[in-house]
Length: 335
Image (cartoon, rainbow, N blue to C red; front, side, top):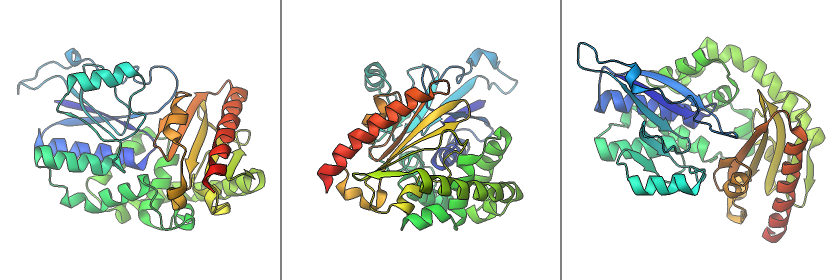
């Protein structure tokens, strides 16, 4: 039996959810299952195109096993009948009213959704423990760090930006890594090694050196370019080929900011990153997931992003400026 796991790509919570699902399935469903992992990214159009594999392509073997099971974790819902397991916690999980209606009507007992959950990793682990008796104790450290990271529960901006702890080094590595074979290796390592052991591996440390240099460039660029007005930090580094190393840099530089809107170039696309200050969460009134959803993006009430075609950078900048204007209005009411 082949199990194909679709997971939120370049995300520590996404990779952790994929690793936890594979261990749950192996321990509670079928010990001899084979796994393959496919990273999913938000963007315009049908993001599930090509993600599902046809079961008939996997004939029954001598042991009577055949076909393919599909699971999607930490990513939006699909009404495709091939979706066997689904776990998500994003407010923007349903990209259309029809998708949400389908989810509600089908009531698949293997589809789990809770937008109030802080991380998909903990939600998945707790759900599998309750429904299938999955023992989560061996993965306690992993689950706790994934929950802290996805909930942005860092003690201060310095912890998030300087990433001295092994888990935060891995968070940074995951967000920057574009090598498919290393993504698969990392997911496998999460099921067998401690976070400190993984962070000490050459494939992680060798990559972190240039990432630190890139992080210094990003910090310098945001310091030079960020516009702080009425509680909102706005920056555009799309012309510098600088991707976000830490979305918490603007709060590191402007600790009292209410919101942040950033524009950057990603491989093959442009991206608008939108966030609210996690250290002043009590004053947030804007729902960022709703704002991003209006432009085809998604996320949580406190943080989200929008991916747009790389060919329309001016359109991306226009949307980002409009969002910044909307958030300034919200911030003025929050004082």
